[in-house]
Length: 329
Image 1 (cartoon, helix red, strand yellow):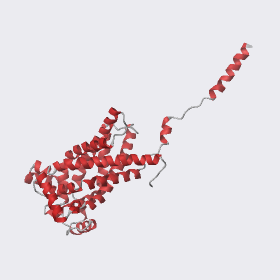
Image 2 (cartoon, helix red, strand yellow; image 1 turned 90 degrees about the vertical axis):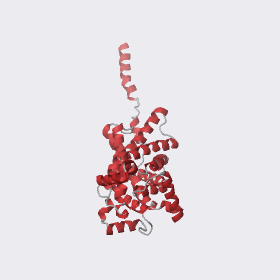
Image 3 (cartoon, rainbow, N blue to C red; image 1 turned 135 degrees about the vertical axis):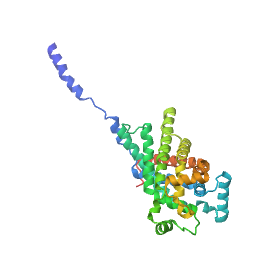
Image 4 (cartoon, one colour; image 1 turned 30 degrees about the vertical axis):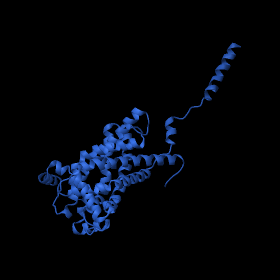
């Protein structure tokens, strides 16, 4: 009898075991969450770039005027240029060339932010940090690659914008006129003049800027235990990133502008080293290669802060809309 009870209990055990339910892994649940597409990142990036550049357009135009001339820079002189431009051509003339800036900046920012998201995913998968904050070197590399990708694809528009910023309305009436006139009078290759210093400047600038911003966000999250900073904190992180990034790459920015506008200011800048040598010889290192840097310390942090903040806020807004079941495309 006892033997039969024992057998009966043994027979019931497997039945009890088969009724146990297993929960799916948490990673499967995560995969079901809506994610933003590259198109979403492109749209957010274009909007962020447009907002940031429009805000600082008058300062940007004034900086370019000083960069391409041998005039000595000072805050007083910069204000005088802005005031004289306003008195001579009106308030909206302070935004002259901004249409060309928008045509360049919107695709540039869109490509830069979108490619940065993609490079982060690629490098995260390669280094085994998928979905997490990247280690320092891949974080720097992702920013540099994003900036280089954007610069390579939009460079002629940057050339056109620089020309419009330093010339009178009579010389170039609109963006297409600049393209046509440069191509006819100076050759199509001129549209890529200054390309090498641009790329050499973008690599450290974009790398350092994205690296600093992402690092500050990571440190903030570790300290406060909040996954998302407040908008004013993002502005501060972006401002720090812009300040450090632009200071590191500024001399190459001056060289790039001189080479881009050589055809309209009567100079013969053809090589990076030759242009640097000529600037240092005529104006010195600090007053030549770093001319306008103090203005960049004002406009740069503002622009980068606004740009990063706008991108992150619109990115998070789109994500929430996707989670609610809405789609913008």
